[in-house]
Amino acid sequence: MNDPESKPPKDKLVETSRLFDGIDAVANAQAVDAVQPDELAITGEEDLSKDYPEALSRVQEARDVAEIKQLGEVVRQTKRVNVARLIVLGSLFFLIVLWIVSVVLLTIALGFRWRGYWLPDLVMITYITTTTASVFGLFHIAAKWLFPTKKDE
Image 1 (cartoon, rainbow, N blue to C red):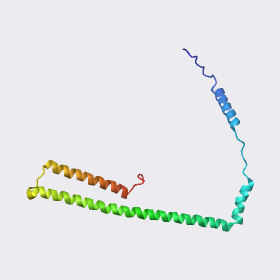
Image 2 (image 1 turned 120 degrees about the vertical axis):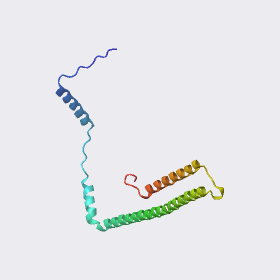
Image 3 (image 1 turned 90 degrees about the vertical axis):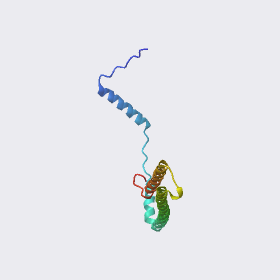
Image 4 (image 1 turned 135 degrees about the vertical axis):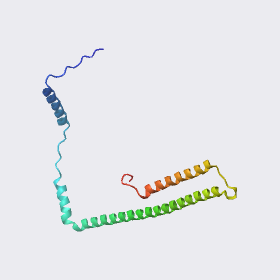
């Protein structure tokens, strides 16, 4: 199955000229007549601004009212998010304090063998490590949410 290879054209300029002629022919076949703008529509728009300034001012006032309502909603949403952030921050602070107190109490109870309380060292190390990792992980997630960067948004 030997396919005959086409020979490269001898003159690149002639080939490029034929290519552009073909593109030009296709473009001319698909060309759409340019539509002139409707003069009445253009004058109508100009007349609206000259003849009906109170109508335009009412439209502008309506836009202003809608924009003010939208900005008010944005402010209310921001306040809600800030309140939620304060609640999460307080809860996170309480969790961290609880974690520190639990680790200190457990360490004291193990150190003094309070009422015969004893845990293997491996259990104590595991407890401190896992709770520390969990609390720092929660803190990292909350901090990213409380203080987002431009890339996170």
